[in-house]
Image 1 (cartoon, rainbow, N blue to C red):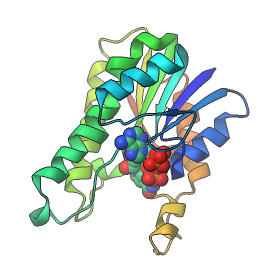
Image 2 (image 1 turned 180 degrees about the vertical axis):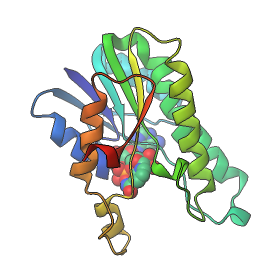
Image 3 (image 1 turned 30 degrees about the vertical axis):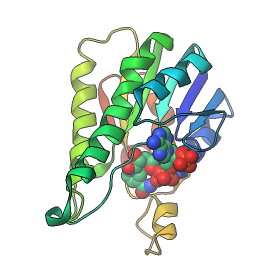
Image 4 (image 1 turned 30 degrees about the horizontal axis):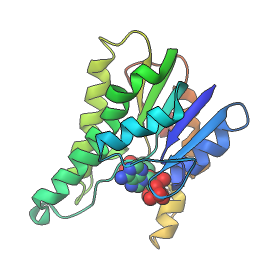
Length: 198
Ligand SMILES: NC(=O)c1ccc[n+]([C@@H]2O[C@H](COP(=O)([O-])OP(=O)(O)OC[C@H]3O[C@@H](n4cnc5c(N)ncnc54)[C@H](OP(=O)(O)O)[C@@H]3O)[C@@H](O)[C@H]2O)c1
């Protein structure tokens, strides 16, 4: 398959690209690096990315910005970032990209387990994750040509290490990548919890 990965230069995206590159042709998209550049927060940039790549068999997003902050400190701009970038940026990959995806192909987005297992400070991220999971569940009822799914990662070991945290409960990026490989076939309208696929 020819697979476009948005966020391929990131912690999870690099591992997904590495896992899938053994059997598939990978086009790596990133914000500041990659085979093609894209800004998820800008629909025109998404249109330009697909015009550059042409037809692909699958799109995987391992991108999407949203920030942690205590509830009382969340500003309009925090909610707007989560909504414009993580939610609509990824949903626009489906809306603007589906014409470029071959029959039987797929789009896999990224949410996170905070949608169902929130922690203090995660309200705007949890909101974005839940929105993505509900969108895919509903959109799949009307989309029969391509498959739509979301992968919900848990805290990634490498991210915890980068943040100076104890990473013993983390799931490695390589293990996280397995759910994205699984989502390529046989799933539609689903949220794949990474912990169920290691
Ligand atoms: N890591 C975790 O523990 C964890 C856990 C649960 C969920 N998640 C979710 O998984 C996703 C990826 O996380 P990650 O830790 O792999 O992130 P990351 O290491 O920060 O990588 C993010 C990727 O997205 C790209 N990107 C940044 N801004 C962008 C934009 N405006 N438009 C398009 N691409 C953009 C980056 O490109 P550049 O490098 O060029 O900026 C990079 O390739 C996020 O949605 C995150 O919320 C992560």
